[in-house]
Length: 214
Image (cartoon, rainbow, N blue to C red; front, side, top):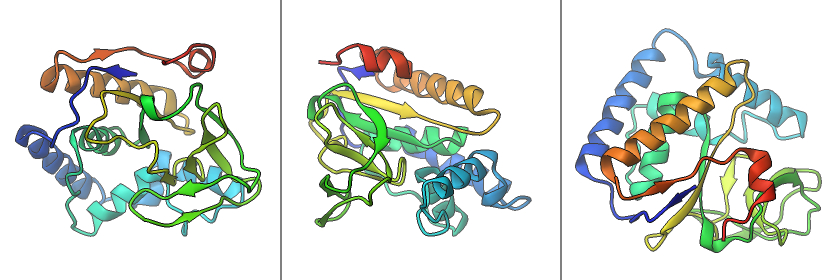
């Protein structure tokens, strides 16, 4: 969890690092496919396990990598989102960022009942998840994501006024714990460079379920 951040437009130095990371990704993908990346392969298996066709519903990491592989550059959204994208493609793990002041803790993973409301980030549409779909919810049962790390609800995403944020990195492959730890370390290091005033608190999943982030 991070506190005291200013979610302004990303500094030019951060954008330069993203361009460099994109180049590294494109170079790596010249000798191997996205599907061969352990994290992507593992997430595809997870999506299949709860009925989400992984070639139709891409986890957030794979979605970023596919854009880069097509020669696209990742658009600059905001300081926090750009930081998250850089860490995600560098460490090869999906990463989600949520405004702490917009949801009721604790956040948790569960199965959708199909009655929840979902407001897709980047869209004005509102829909409902499928019954049994794996989702993130807050303590009130409000949807924070659909299909685990496929789409994020715009109500809980970081905003220009965001000052406190919950950053979540997840993995299911063999080297997942090490890659998640590397993502956490890199995110913290980048914050230290660009926002030394920000306070960072490391939370494990069990701790998140036990303490308030009010």
